[in-house]
Amino acid sequence: MSFSKEKINQKISFVQNHFEKILELDFDGSEQEIMKSKNLFQPPQADRDYESLGYALDGLQSKRSQSLFAQLSLFFEVGILLQKQSDQQAKPFPWLSKYSFAYGHFFHEDSTLITKVPTTHLDQIFKKTETSGFEKLKCSRWIEKNKFQAFLIPLEKDIYFIGLTGMAEPWLKIHLEKIQKRLLTSDL
Image (tube, rainbow, N blue to C red; front, side, top):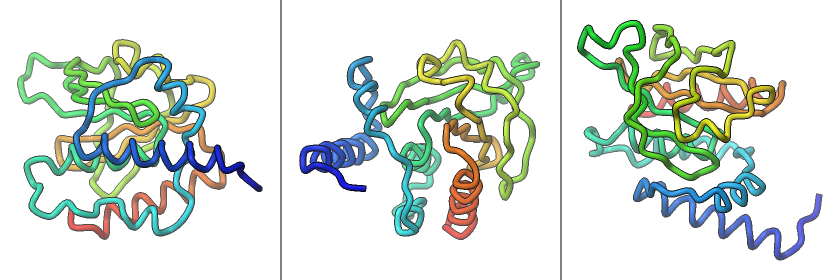
């Protein structure tokens, strides 16, 4: 597979801009910019890319989940950071979506997620059988219902990540195993 010099420069520019956004959790996303990022998006393939997941979280306890959420944006096309609400009035949907992203562009949400979120252990990745319930979110326009699969990944006891991807098997299984292994072996 060969790439033109222009295509390589576009990818390098995309990655540089993405890392700047991760450092700032820069909330943006005009439709044109997201579409351009969608065309350039490619999940990591090298083991070294997975090794960086969870890196540099020391001393960031207060923003650990937010930082990890930003890092996970390199591994999924669309993602949502969920925080469980503590009050009892939140039933039957006690989960608040704090942030979301689509192809590296972040959105501030603060809206109730209208979908059931199963309880899972910190060492499990749970496959969500449907990609519905996200209609109120700013990232919903970018969720391709017939193409994407959704995965629930606990980051902390009351903070979960939902990652949506169109990656096909058998690569998807390997991709998720590498993410899970890295999350379990890092000092999260």
